[in-house]
Amino acid sequence: MKIWKKNIDVDTFVEKFTVGNDRELDLLLAEADVLGSLAHTRMLNSISLLEEEDLQAVQQELKNIYQDIQKGNFQIEDGIEDIHSQIELMLTRKLGDAGKKIHSGRSRNDQVLVDLKIYFRNQIQGIAKNTKTLFNTLIKLSNEHKNVLMPGYTHLQVAMPSSFGLWFGAYAESLVDDMTILHGAWKICNKNPLGSAAGYGSSFPLNRKLTTELLGFDDLNYNVVYAQMGRGKTERVLAQAMSSIASTLSKFSMDVTLFINQNFNFLSFPDELTTGSSIMPHKKNPDVFELIRGRCNKIQALQNELGYITSNLPHGYHRDLQLLKESLFPAITSLNECLEMLDFMLQHININTDILNNPIYNYLFSVEMVNKEVLSGVPFREAYQNVGIRIEQGDFTPDKQIHHTHEGSIGNLCNEEIERMFQEAEKSFNFKKVQDALALLLQ
Image (cartoon, rainbow, N blue to C red):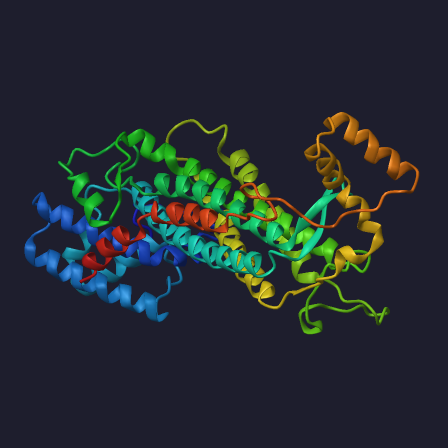
């Protein structure tokens, strides 16, 4: 069944190519499609395009379908082109003419647009939840290990004293900015395109503000042409936000692969969380972190891939847009898996608390010695030269006491402020408004 079919059958070879993986991926949009139809049919009733009796029947059957989807009892039948066709066919089989009326005032174009917006909102909420879990773990580890010193590096050369508290806290604060960027994607996803039809509106007196309210959107995509143009742009913005989180995870994983190395020996994990070698019995490989790094680097490339698919398209709908789902949907799953796995691994991390007792790290404290002379009245440039000469002559003896007190330093991590910023970023999403609206729609 094709809801656009007239009297001509499409060549099966062409049909297989054009449909691609759409049927499989459409199953992920099933709940969203039902929600969009629940709102759309209530709107049709409000403008007298769907009688009250038909509305009640359609609403109840849509809710039944929704429950089947949640139970895993829903599928797209062989020969049915997409999720929209399947649901309309099920309604028509059960309700007759009432099921045939639900497509009035909309096109598959705006139907898939609203499905994607609803789906992306839900996925963003899941990403935000997993990001919060990882953030809390990083803050916890930062507080627990705030007094454990480690080397800090520039150019991968030993530079100045750092701490595990500082290191964990840095990645926690990075997630604050990532959440802010994710909120930008949320704001774009949380605008209602329904009613834009094929991209040029409808001659029916649609009440687009009603569907906006029913679906919990913050606002409309007002211009119907731009509503259609937003497909592709929405995905790219979401990919950019995912890329920001992926960048944080990838960089952290790179650090771990260095620090677990025997030449560093800063941290370790239980044997059962590492892998071995087929010929080297001593190996404990950080495969989990290497895969997180690789997956997240792949996610960072996603926005470019989506850009190449869409950047030279004129306005209006084009079938190229179908390909976006094939790249973006698996990437969302992969990012969530990386967030969950990284948090799991951090629950089992072991920290070396005696790193700086090794004399190879004595020069970490050269700046501390310079600053100590400056505080006693020696001009900075002269103090710098004094310490430099002692290092060259082999007479440098470090004072390993740390006296950092300013905001964000070893002695003043400001984790409470970082937590405050994260909480503010999290609250800005207002997920509850959407949840409440959809719950009301499903009653």
